View 1 (spheres, rainbow, N blue to C red):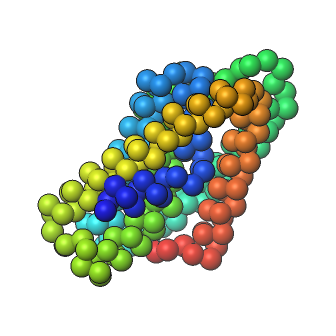
View 2 (spheres, helix red, strand yellow):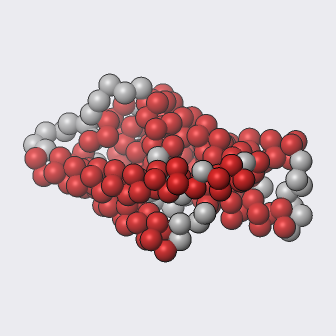
Amino acid sequence: MGFLVSFLGQLPLGNMSFTSTQICIQEGFAKAWQYAIGVAIVEMIYLRLALTGMNWVVQHRKLFLGLGWLTVGLFLVLGVMAFVSARKQKDEKKALLLNNKLNRFVLGITMSALNPAQIPFWFLWTSTLIQAKILPVANNPFNEFTIGAGTGTLAGLAVYIHGGNWLVSRKKTSNQTLNKIMGVIFIITALIQLWRMLYKPWI
């Protein structure tokens, strides 16, 4: 169940999933998988927090709200920078997020950590599954669910790593176009996050 929920939640196009495609195209499968593992680890931490630390999250509401507003500003800036980079780009340079020496595992951890929307996602699903008595309230089922969810995240990103690489290679999409797509994704994500912060702060 954890695998299924996480896998399906990872499939809609987003900045983290599209970044895995860009890394694969420009740096190879090994770096893309390093990134994916970083994303999955943080997702598992957020999920475990949702399962066993709901009281702690509620007590530290301002911390997570602050992180949510930081995400809005960061994604807007990255979206604008991606468009500026695409406009100035005259050769096949790396994508904006990848034009650095940051370890891709660390990049995955960072991007996943700056995505607090995962917490309400997992709050919703875990509470629903617990109320439906599908997920027993005990350590072993929680651990199994968390491991399944982490595996589902990796499987979802695998679709973008391998399928995205195949599609972009087949269409011969330029890095300039990829930067524009990433810019659109970042700005849409920022607007969605802004709507959540204004109307559904979730805690």
